[in-house]
Image (cartoon, rainbow, N blue to C red; front, side, top):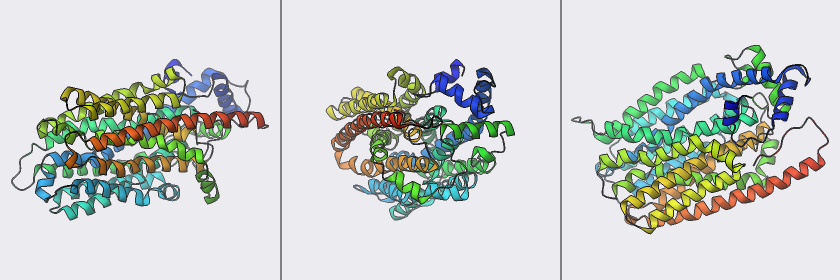
Length: 482
């Protein structure tokens, strides 16, 4: 691999020697039959093709996904609650109901994707949630808002887990973590874009359509238009990918068979799924993902409110809500270098969650505006940095079969979304402006996530040693990556 490729491979444990052996055998069945440079060139060409088609489109659609989901936070500060007669914790109920709808079908989403195909299911989901998002702009009561939030959650479920699953089909293990991290970069980018955009949209004056309605309607329409393109861009798996030539398809199939991660065309057997679900290590890994998503959610949904309560106007709060997410986006761009500096996913992830923990401590300890803004930025930096590490780590470390990949991607999204239950009910209006309950809960969850990283590291180390001691098949390349 050239130096630029190496710089992108976050925490990969595949050595140069092992990579060369895999690509040589994948192409010609012998290690001496073709040069390393030719292997690198073919792998680089293949990955660029997938990056330009699958990854780029998935990232754009995910930006719209996150923006549509979080637009309720912006709508709140420009009159949503007053116009719908919402009082006390009605807003928290609305955000909780989104999570209820999201989780109601999430566990089964990857089974449906394997049956229907990513190229058909994922664009359809995008069109559905775009329509529901736009319909939020025509509601007149809080009961209708509650119903729309449930429907929005149900229509979005399956999208993120489905993208993670097909990324595991297309990318080799040593490339996967980086691409998943780039995909999740869409989350802070959505906040950076949607804050100022929603601020601009909310300035539209219309005799009958109110400012918060414009936010929902226009963002939903944009999503529907972009989703239609997915029917022509997305592919189900590399074995039948139309934009790859025959040589590239043969190369990646043999390569992934060699490393033990080929799963795109394999059937998803219930027995294998239950076997993976019975592995306690998979569940422990999800604690870190839960913590990172809790920190990200604090920034994504409640940043406008938190900033507004510090004395800024609604328009200022909308624009400034992009600042913590911008810090998170920068952290995600450089997280690969930080992981390499740490030498492992678990240590880098622990540091990210510790940063978010410090941010929560700063916000709960004072009402000083500059200090709290810095604390919010630290929370965004640590949370989004964790989001750039943990999902990719979860899938890379559990890519030995299609069942393991499906379960890992599904649980990653399930636990990430589950953080919304906590988040929606700890940042309550009566606790403003300090929001001591919410920040205290965040501190505890960050500590839980750090513990999860440490336990996972110890478990993976022990399992790798046992596999090395008992291995008799030299062809088997799978090892847990920590």
